[in-house]
Length: 528
Image 1 (spheres, rainbow, N blue to C red):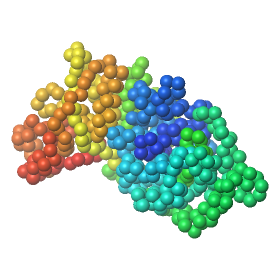
Image 2 (image 1 turned 180 degrees about the vertical axis):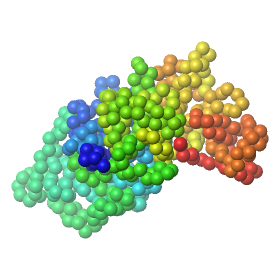
Image 3 (image 1 turned 90 degrees about the horizontal axis):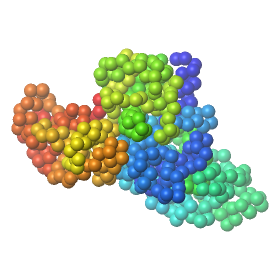
Image 4 (image 1 turned 135 degrees about the horizontal axis):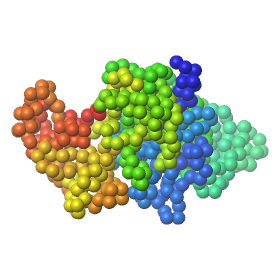
């Protein structure tokens, strides 16, 4: 391994931010960019005409509603580290995009609402992290509002997530009296001063809790803070780096992302704690980041990031070696060689040409319809990275086109939007309907809005009796023809050409499986 590659690998950190909706995840993303120097003014997340929309929310519907519906990729530097931050959708309806994003990172920053504790979506996402043994760093947000007691929050985390917790900072006051945080590592008081909306705060740092200055700044909170620190020394779990890297223990930080309280302490500690790029599994072997040969996999596809150019971008996680502009790489699934001259790096919608990229980096490769989610690229070796999932949708709608003259635009729009993975497109073996399947109802609203906004297509989504999707595979190839003849009206093909069974009830799916030994019906499929 060259000295340059070794140095660049050590500098990289690839991480995702996850949370339940409205816990403050996108606000945290903005503030990390602010403190990292990537932006000079953080945009407000709420959708008000008098405010900016969040920098990481670039779709029209995101700006209108003040929510994130697609993973945003942002790269910036801080403390001589190259940070690749992925802001995931918090809304449950878009959880499949988040699940796939978690396959492309080496650590996770989890944002928790201090008033609500662990919520449903957080619990589901942590299950994915636990399966992959992904290290998790926790930020307890919104301490400037009414909240649970800090000790109760730690207890809630341990009970709900099954993880040990080690606090690294501790809040000074709560609600309107929230003054700052005490850094338990270096034993300093970080007392925050007010700042203009969206800008960085000034801090006053004390290196002792004794003396008149501490008394003046902290007032009634000083004695309570001293007592709580003393209690923590005996009650909190000691820091264990090995347990953290295995996903069994999480360091905990307290603060308010909106007011910037505790964000810098979090970012500084994150740089110290988060692991550099890790080895990646393939069907054939484990790929080490320090290998000289380039390899990477696609975990996300996004259409129309720039509406003027009608572009499609494949987001690729570099797993090993060095990517250099103009180099030739092999698209393993098709076997074709591709020379990449215009790969991109991102700051949300902003982009710039990549000259070089290293393990842990996220780069965008222009996609002309040939690249799919989970595709692998190498310098020639036949590899397939594993663990990129697709889940069976639970809601189905038939697409009705209001203007028949727009049929081609509809087909193009549906194919491009659904190939991003947030929803799935199905075509019946017999018939010409377009059926869209999704995990949540909001996805249909997003697709309808994007078809109208990005493809000038006016389409409606009609409800259907279908409720169950199963991917179909066969122990013996000769079983397929018989099965298709028997259940033609129930069979569809998804966007990748896989055979699927769509039915009204789970009972019917189970009945068909029981009547057809050698035919396997599954609720998930690993993308290849």
